[in-house]
Image (cartoon, rainbow, N blue to C red; front, top):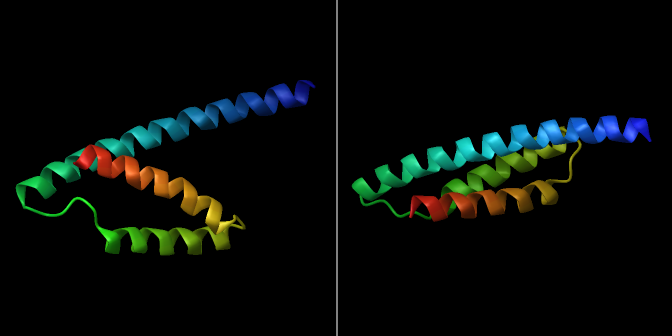
Length: 86
């Protein structure tokens, strides 16, 4: 049981780091949104989405992770980015 507590504590630390990185990503997306508005660029960029997904699929495969799981997570991140860009 003590081992589970220790592992969960480590997971909590990782969760905090992940949250910080998501916040940083969203902040950058806000900046991109400002630039897109200034230049009359569409918020949604399907080409960029495909580029991200292909790269993530490749990285997931190399690291032994299910690419579909990773893609599901990034779909949510990309949607959140579009929301703050718009």
